[in-house]
Image (tube, rainbow over all chains, first blue to last red; front, side, top):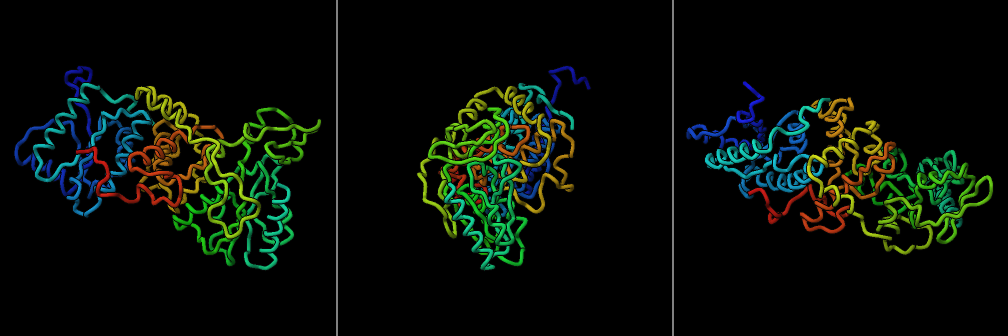
Length: 144
Length: 318
């Protein structure tokens, strides 16, 4: 595929999805035959509380153009409070990643329940368009 | 300060003579008075080597980890910032406060040896303190330095000049008002940059990093027995010093102490490459304080802001 043709360029988005909500939501989008961009690569995690901010940086350093984190709506966590810890941690991490120079528009954190297949498809669509407008992440695969 | 030093030596001698503690941790002169090194006094006669002076920049807190598990309790001569470090380590269950005697010393700030060395004065023989001046004895006479101009960056904003948690305090309490508030000017400047410019600023800074791990080793908030920076599985970073590894190293170091940093500036002080690590720590400190409506989050008594949550925390993720 011609990577040089900008119109055809599809960003790589790494998604960390909670097993109990957004992962099932993405599954629902599939079984509901909703179409969404193929830009997203989903990594299933047990809870948004499992998402170590280092995962996000690692994804960017390894060449992701965007990172999407999906968790249960507050008060809906399968483990009661995992997403509430995640909320604090990711609020700080998001600002810190931006401070280190990662464009904040490349990182989305969204609450998506298992029934929100539609929302999942929309979020991926919006994010793909936004990142396509930004272009490939600068400084990706910066080498070790 | 000379009287305080004598009183501290007497207190150290007494503890060791009584056998109440096995080891006393304090400062002693290094190769010159500008560069003190730690003293692990185990015999009463070693008490005379204890120095309490204006160049005691290094924090002794982290050395206490080496003394955990000793047969007898341990004592430490500590200023307010070191006491904060000890409180941090105790809160992290790394230091057993019940087996530790703290000899607190009020402090008006330590001098930055780098700032003094920059004057190019040659060998310094002895140091004495006079009110607002520090007097250096040089080969060709004396040199008087106004204390305020040569303070360490942490001492300018210190709000712990009188030790908060000491078993005994030697010396008179000092005026506890900080000289100035934490200066976020440089953090503001960075935040205002476009992302690419900020990325290149940090890549330039991190590219100088030697990965000596001194910033981690000195940090009282950074004491895990199994450290992510050395973990083989998962392997967060290699031992190389390429830009990705450097960024990951500094990201891990800074975020792991987010909300736990005591603002002692030790990481920045020990950095042989003078990387402005406090710009990372201050960014995190200010974000934690503003996002979660906290005051003085650098105080170890403040419940770790990232170790708990409030149901009504602000939510920006919808």
